Length: 369
Image (cartoon, rainbow, N blue to C red; front, side, top):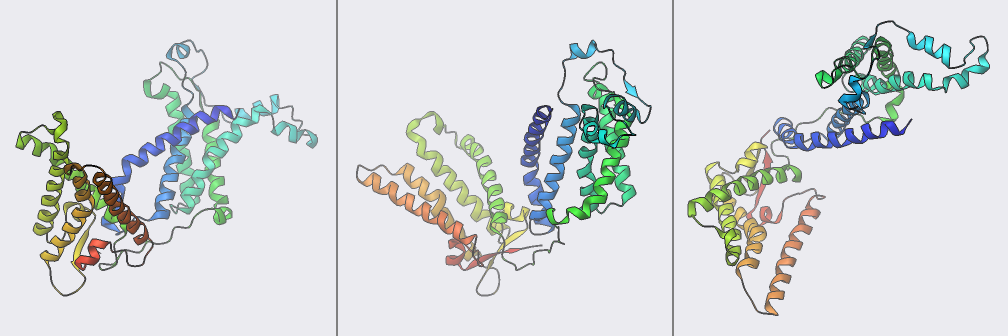
């Protein structure tokens, strides 16, 4: 009995992860532009609600039968008579209403499982709608009815025409029990308060508040994506094919390094302290000491970073040395990159999150929200 639910739940996890991956970038950009930060608790609750809806949908439609087996079905398409489940329960569970001793065993009979499933399936919906969406009892009950109706119509239409006829019955009892489950979830939501996260009102990031590292990394990722998109255009413009000549492997690194320099230095100069990636998430470079806009400091900042990350990789590709000097070169580059990565990790937990190129150039990052 339990095993038949594992496959839909596993598929819902995979589908929810795909939704998360596809929506993560636009979601982060939207929040950084609107709030100056990504609200962690609100995000976790939102994605958990998406997972719940996807899981509920898969539990309703899976497992999918073959078209051939559905064509051979002669079961009813729908049941519009209410409380049939009560009739089946009293008829097949062995319950004797005049004998309370039969109640426990009757409640554990398979005829009751479908009712329990439908009730529990919609119980989280009532909790979510009351606690996180501020729904009233009647709005929650109506929302539960609408979601249940959507599921039942999905079954009635044979998965919107995929199958020649319904492979599961449209049941008015399911509408009733599902709606009841949402109502019960609404009523017990206060009891679950110790085990459900609270979402506080998010504070907007102030203009001169230090920018978080994830926000900076997102801007950098967008900028690097643009640089990599420019690479094949540069190859075409220069009419060279470094990938066809193994001896020119270092050319690709050099070209990316040059493109990065032109892109970061040029865009910061033209956009007065920000790259397109920074503009997308609404952050800007500003001088930490002195007044006014200083292009020289911002150029120096980018040069320091470019020499550390892409510059050290270019060094490995273009310099050919005999042993033991080649090993010494690799070790030196490894230490430089490793030290920088450790610096990034340490900066994530410091109050002042400026990185080494910010400190040496006496610049910082500010939010434009």
